[in-house]
Image 1: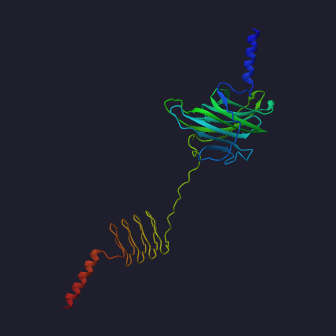
Image 2 (image 1 turned 60 degrees about the vertical axis):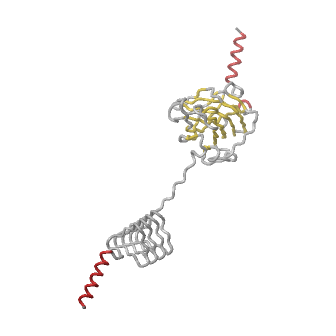
Length: 320
């Protein structure tokens, strides 16, 4: 009986002691070197940090995590190599969750045991996203290594078979990433204090949280615009009313010319150009096929030419 009690006591101490390594679901790397920087962020690794754009290699207040994924193997998911760096007298952690407002988050905790000279240790926890309750869980993690320097904690580790979906026939690598810290006193983890929570990010894409650059917005010029000489008008341009176009202007296809536009000499008008009313078309203007010429244009219309010839003919006959 006494022997059984001793075995139970030893097992209980093993469970409670945070700096014991080599539990069944955790394996530690033989390489103890930890080097975490911004290098490769947005290109070869996905980075999340608070404050924004802080550098974990030179800013002690920077809470930083990065992920690099292996090639996905459906439906198992991906292996994630994670770097975590931050400042805490207890622990820092990264949480992965499919929904930050419900369900659970998987926490990967890098911590120091202040009662044992700040010894580094690692744990996995499951957090209830509704009431923030922490529950120990045996999530397999490999290649763990870490260091503690004062209150600065840095660690690197690999999480195999990451999949956000409960449906094993599918694969989902989109997670909200939570960054935070907490206390560790008397062998007990304090509540996880979330300092940053991201939108859902695809952990396999290093640039999934990099802002995209919006295409520049081109504002059409206002009415009564004077265009300089030797101007090239781009395709699909709508020109405003009362535009004065200088000599040697090149107009591309699909240009809409508005009312009351004055076109100078030597203007090249391309195909499929729509010419509105009251447009003055000067001499030496090249008008291609499929150009629409409205009424009241400065150019003579065919019936006007016939009418002029008829008047001239009648005038000659009357003089005879």
